[in-house]
Image (cartoon, helix red, strand yellow):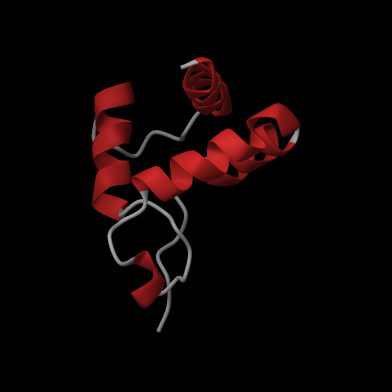
Length: 85
């Protein structure tokens, strides 16, 4: 059983968040909040959003067909916004 490939730009986003320890807990909380229901029963055993949900968010954020890379600055700005709430 193989897992889905991470969306384009995911590693750059992870690196950008890793450089900001003040966002680590916010990022983990966001992952669990956005994780697909029953994530622990499907491979990969990680609390990640469903691929369809990620695709929808990329299309609504950047337009086009959803193939745009996630921009680390956008994700960091979102996590900082979550932290202030």
